Length: 99
Image (cartoon, rainbow, N blue to C red):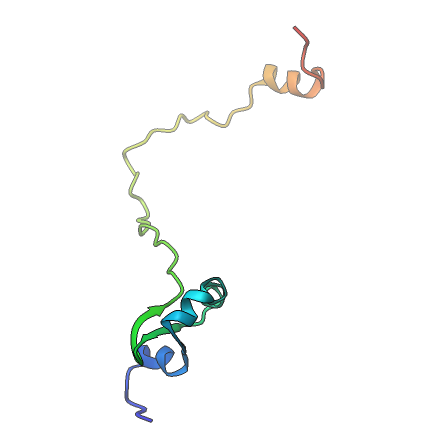
């Protein structure tokens, strides 16, 4: 074993290989195994021609703190409670009015 080798080749070392006909017949089962993190190799005439690997989660755009600074305005009283609306919510009818 080459301890200085990059680990990117490690999954192939432990991956289970299937011939094309067997992979075709067991595709649903193989997909389930890949979903659990396994790597599956598919061979044709004894040569690896495909590799099933778990899909990567879609990457999110990198967040940049402060990107909206100076671009948006929030009223100083935006979170002020409107007394009339608060009273209606607290004391008003629980059921919607029919009409």
